Image 1: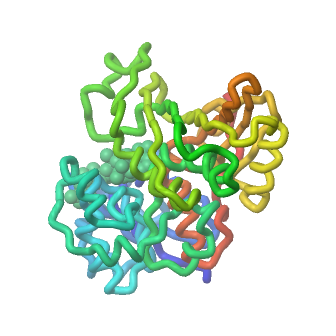
Image 2: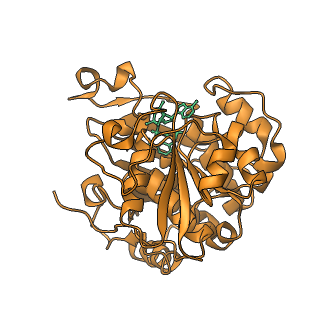
Length: 354
Ligand SMILES: NC(=O)c1ccc[n+]([C@@H]2O[C@H](COP(=O)([O-])OP(=O)(O)OC[C@H]3O[C@@H](n4cnc5c(N)ncnc54)[C@H](OP(=O)(O)O)[C@@H]3O)[C@@H](O)[C@H]2O)c1
């Protein structure tokens, strides 16, 4: 199905801006509604003069009737807790939704409440059935289910990079389910466009610092998918770091190999086979390690595997652009699938370098 109209709610934020930029070049999807809060009432050309849209729309409050009148699909790029106030009404009106927040990433509403209640603006939710129905939008592992969905929960940026590295090894039972460690780094755009003290240039420049050590909210999201792949509960260690760069995310994943005879070449062959039908994932040759600059402004994940034969450790490195494969690019992949298109339609895979 082609010629679908898309509403972008949270248009002025980082996820909204990337979505709009990607849809500018899209052959079959067009932007028909812009939604926001503080930017409501502003004409797009006044708000974002550097990214002109064919129809110079005015940003509007995200009223479900107005969205349904204008659009077939909606991308919600909102702070956690807000999508849940819109999604039931949008689905009821026949609008399919890709949500970039965490509101529908957990199968259990109670689990979402445990992890997000403190931060979310809206915690009184009764849409547990929609949490069960939503499809987790990691395109490379759930393409067929996303095609049939009404509601897609796009994964978080850290989970995207970590799970693409980890899932093939868990599915094949090649690593121990205990003792998995993920050490990850992200640029400051991971925190969104709204002002935050730790993201000021004076705070984040020329510095590297861990945050959310033990109990970061993405830990439970990664564990949920890792457990599904392994067929048993998994607890793992995840530590993010803030890097003095605007965009980009690198996750280094450590796991203990069950067969100490497996080499980096064996593991690379397995990864290549797992992603042979996924142009968004490229597996590098052994000894070539990915840089965030190699995926900047692209919807690609670069993976590389190494094995330390002394310690029996598997090391998988995974680089993405947090705002594209980690957020809006993955969202557009999901829009494509909901529209009956190839997942990668209209999405960039090669960077301008440097
Ligand atoms: N940044 C990343 O790397 C990343 C990666 C993956 C997932 N995510 C998730 O994606 C979502 C969006 O993140 P972001 O970084 O793009 O955030 P952001 O830059 O802070 O943008 C948030 C947007 O939400 C809008 N908004 C806020 N309250 C609203 C309300 N009550 N009604 C309507 N619109 C409202 C804002 O519009 P106004 O300006 O008009 O107020 C703004 O456009 C978050 O849930 C985030 O966790 C982010």
